[in-house]
Length: 217
Ligand code: ADP
Ligand code: ZN
Image (tube, rainbow, N blue to C red; front, side, top):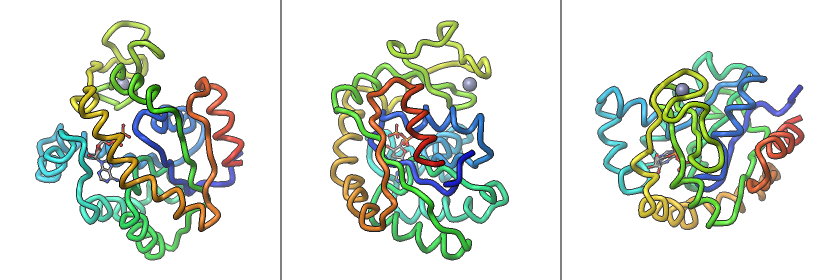
């Protein structure tokens, strides 16, 4: 059983936040709030929010703080998040962290833990540029490290696997630079609030998962 259920997953792109959340969500009744997944779904549906997000995502830039924060605030108020939530990919700036605090206050909730995933930059680049994503359920696979059972097909839902356009080498490098500049300061921010716990993301998936459960128990 885990006791920490209102959780932020922090870390650079490619560190395995999505991969370990997927495993955890099979065992725990938590809402998965992945801002990147929400944007990709909005892009797929062709909404105004999707169009706006795409103009930033294509170059690896961050979508404006207020836009993301409003979206997350609405989620936090929904029934889906009543028993706990994993915030995956949010907050990504100090401003977003401040807006999150307000939203949590309004929803009468508080954070139990912020889990920092980290790995050497070369490994992150290797993982991102070989990543395959399911068009239907958003699950990720990897051409080198975690091949699907059938090439091009999602193990979980049979959906088509594709390479995200922002997983090209150039955009992946931009995203890592954006992480260092804008998201890295959150490590100090949450350390100051005594919420930060670390996971070494270069560990194999099973060990990483055991470490995550231990942190949340
Ligand atoms: P990854 O963690 O692999 O970088 P995500 O799916 O979390 O990928 O994010 C993809 C893109 O979506 C980001 O590069 C950014 O443009 C946008 N995005 C996602 N979450 C946020 C956020 N919290 N703030 C601003 N932009 C975001
Ligand atoms: Zn799938």
